[in-house]
Image: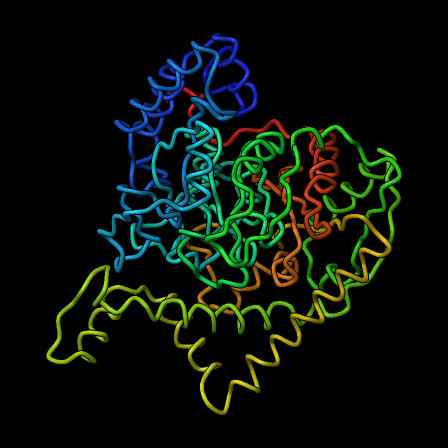
Length: 495
């Protein structure tokens, strides 16, 4: 290796075990890169360098004895939606500006137990509500990629934009994300990295600040699928503290990467060829089909007939749950408080000052669809549509093993190109939402660059709890694409 920034999470793991590098020097290099580059990117909300350096020394001591967990000494970042004991956790909102949890989320506890070293808490759209990472109370995140011949700031996608940007820029070897309607997959595509949304229930939601409880699912983001597989194996598992956690064994995901796709049936849903699909997106999709076919997969044209209803049903269901979940932020029990002459005035002042514009919009819409007279017309109907969407996938998997589609309808766009109409912004999730509504696993891998020189991703969607087949097919795409491009801003590039 010519540089510590050339390491993937997997190769760094092996180098640490072989004592070719130390955890201290690996962690120090990434802390230095964060100090050098992140003031511009703004991917971190809270940095924890001292805790990380102490953990690195402990990791080296364990490795010297031949001990330590599977992630021992590996520097990662944590989306600031996961509660971390004694470390500020904000959900990128003013209302939690000074919240320091006295407990640890299960996902981060699992990673810590396996030896991963957190370098800090990563930026996101406020309460995970957004597709740009521009709704954060701590400022927007800049995508480390830039268009050819331009210095315009590009969005990293959302809501896990800080995680995606930090991984793409080489500030961390991997990161946690959460995916409610595409919040791992879309930023992974925009930033040219890999991201996996596991089956709903595969990773515990305990200690993860809720947006929409029936949709939120933690997952890994990293430079490639091997690194994602390693992280997912640590993150996943049954948790009795989470009633939606499923008691199923966690497979050895990394071993599934070499399976190949010979004899695998890959579905191509006709509904995803939407009107106005950019030619570049259609071209990479066709290329992905060709790569899988060349590797021995059988391509099957198929239908997911209720796809067109996925996006409106998602925004009704998700916003209704957001309205319920965010009711706890009242300025009384925890979080920021703005005093008022009465209890109602305290509530109003606290929420007015604490919540951003997008969060307020979603709470209002969610409260409306749950209100008397509208519950049956909107929320109940959305739940019925959700059942139909899930049935579409179950019927599809009687004929195919995985489904291939684009991840997003475009590459990363500029900050000042953000649509002013919120509905237009919500359309960024058109390809990712159906899998979230159904609860099935999905992933995104980078497969090329658009005409502006920014990444494009392809998405694979799999059967319930069959992340192994998903990773195997994704690995074939990844190898065929051979995506080795790096963004303009990267830790391994001299200033």
